[in-house]
Image (cartoon, rainbow, N blue to C red):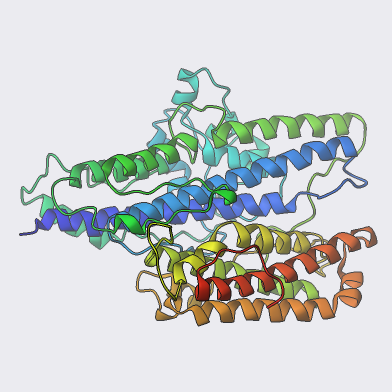
Amino acid sequence: MSDPLFDLLKKKRLIPLLREAAEIEQQVMVQYLYAAYSLKKFPDATCTPAEFEHVRRWGTVLLSVARSEMEHLALVNGMLSAIGAPPSFERQNIPVQFRYYEGESLARGRDEKGTDPCDIPFLFERFNLATIERFVCIESPSKETLVKDRMRIPEWCFSCGKPTAAQFRLGADKPYPAAESHIPDELWAEVEAEMNQGRGLKAAPESLKPGSIQELYDKIEELFKFLNGRGNLFTGNPSSQVFVPVEYQVNIFPIVDLPTALSAIRLITEEGEGMDAPPDFQSHFLRFFTIHDELDELLDKARKAKRTFEPALPLPLNPRPGQIKNPFARDLFELFNYTYATLLFLLTALYKDFTPLTTTNPQSYPFFSAALQENAFGPMMTMLIRPMAEILAYTASGDGEHTTGPDYHLSAEDLARLGPKGSDELGNIDFFLGRFDEIVRRLDRLRGRRDKDLLRSARDKGDLPFLRRQLDFVYESAVAMGNNTRRIYQLGQLPQFIVNP
């Protein structure tokens, strides 16, 4: 007979906590990507060749950390899969304020007596000193941990008196919408009622809601340890754990039991998001702190030389469709969101019912998982999402001031498909082939207007060769992905990308 407390803790605490963690990982990732895509791709009047070498390297670091966040997102979904829960790739639209990143929660979670941590809203903001300081704060361990390990302390994270940090502290005059939680109050009340009946009250993890990301992962770890062996916890099929082809350099591993679940939690907490693990050279915190110092030094040198150093393009803060007056930019902006949603649909379908194709696991038509797996991680991010965002960054929005940035918007229809109930469409290869066909159709239309529209839309005429080359690359990549998805589904082969049908 199943223990009511076990069922409640698994279904109404562990699963919601993991869904919360999955959303945070994705939210952090897209912010880092926005800043990375805003960086210039070649020197110009406000970025010398010597300065551009720093800019190029900063972009590499930002993209590397964003890929690490994708790994964290994949590991959290691996944990969900391991306990028989549906995948979680939905995300609230930015800007948004999570309570984990409110100053009060940060102070309580880090036990920072006498400090006044900044509220840290999740924003889409181009790369600048305030942005990188916000990223440092997102990833910073507690002040106590930094002091203990004799690390430099980003004082702006623990006292909002610094002007640059004040730019990202919430105020009554500039509120951001509060994020909804995957952990509704009534679920916690039900768990507490069961616990108060004497069923494992002393042994079970505290009922207090997590107040920081550190606490969130601490409670996930506590629940895994508490529930393991008390009931049927790892009900997912071990052979259905998603793996990523090694060439995509996304490092995830199967989660099939308590040791592998704890290894995943340890990897996530050692790398970032405000954890109290001692920072090392792999930590996101130290990598961002290094960028901050280099940027601060270069800006100071430029000021002393009475010149301007600008490493990023003028992308807007939290872009919105209504702000984009340029028809070419607006069409590409909407296509970017359609493409990003397609990637999330691919990942959801892949994690929902993954069947590996190996030499020891021969299969026959249809090869659905293999077709999705080939596109889900590396190709769509590097061959569609990234170049589209780079084109937008160099394309005038039409307001006379900014270029264009993506907002990764998910519609109500998108969120319904990504939600726990899912959608039957995501189990049908025709749905994905139709999405790729639509991406190709829209790109082909944009290419047909290329010469006229890019001439009007380019930030500078010197950017035209780059924009034309990127647009052609995205179109050819989309054609290849559609063709390969169809071929792999039919034959199970993983060929090189084929542009011609």
